[in-house]
Image (cartoon, rainbow, N blue to C red; front, side, top):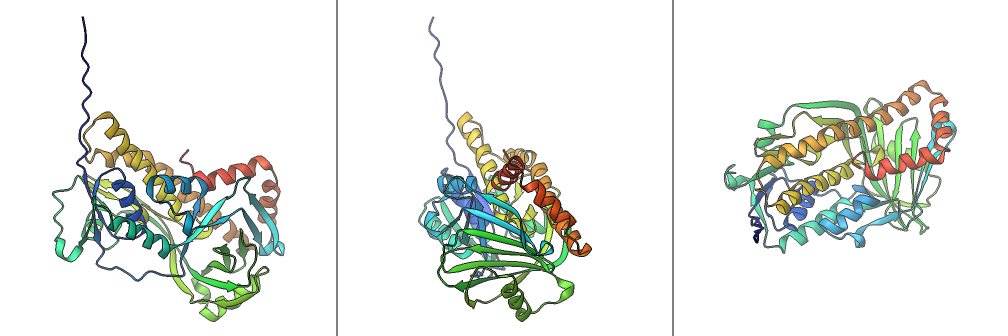
Length: 371
């Protein structure tokens, strides 16, 4: 007796609408259309001009995923081989030293360059379309899933207004300094008495600055420039470009979805920039969402908004733990700053010399707790 086995593969006609056109939206859209999923991106009513002073960091494992599953960005990144961490309370002694045995530990790139690359790639694709939010009139019946990254959309205000939020009462000042040509492949983080200051190389002649300070001190641009020069021990600065700032907070969304509506990107989680993990968390979310969709396609299962609940189950607890872990680091060094002694830094310095602990720190920075 012969048995005939028929394998039926359901054609993927999934349609997704993404509200907002920031980096999270465009990266997710590119990942989905690469799977031949139709994606419409609704441009935010409050579209802001791209800030050319903002940069972001991408870990090694996330960069590998981004290059393979989203878009290759090797031409616009600057690779870092080491990260040095100092404390002003230890008279700028080195606290921790993270090194890579490979060609990179972390990569830095300009936000607007990544945004432009994603936009250019998407416009060429038949699976992609942009919508004007003013003309759309919130008709989402034809989509299997509607994903919002837009703080100001009516969907966000209706379904995703319950947040666990902590305001730091501090601001991050960002700029890019131009300096003499050097071998510039080591990032530096200094926990100063005014707040954490990061020097993030983006070329042999340019370095991004992120300086987080307490709002109660009411520092102006001139004071920030003065502090950057004070703590700089590496660069012969030619020019400090336009300095911009934004308020800092720690945020976790209580519920990730409501039926066919899913929140994404910074709407799900927002963290302190001291560890450079904000966009890395979003990339890990894209990785998980893509895997869920791939599994359904491979099994011939219908693709519907059950994806949303599965995504929440796989990510919410991990994101919550990781976000609060970064918050703990901030509060740890903030406490030391207020105590005005070096006991805590000395402890970190001691444990950081242990190679096993050092490897754990590197792994968490690279892969989070998503492994």
